[in-house]
Length: 69
Image (cartoon, rainbow, N blue to C red):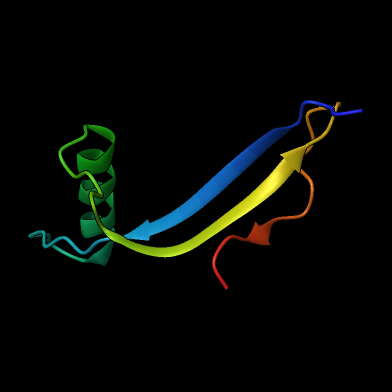
């Protein structure tokens, strides 16, 4: 008998941005603000990793498996 499952896919995408800042900490803080304000959007970006897992009845995530080998 077939059963319905919930699966979750997680992608790690990277993209580089340039920013003027006083120091590394300032650059991180400014970068976070720009990202949260949707000024920096990673699209298409570079796909680093894609994984998939099944969510169980308790809402817990099983083991992550790579989608691409």
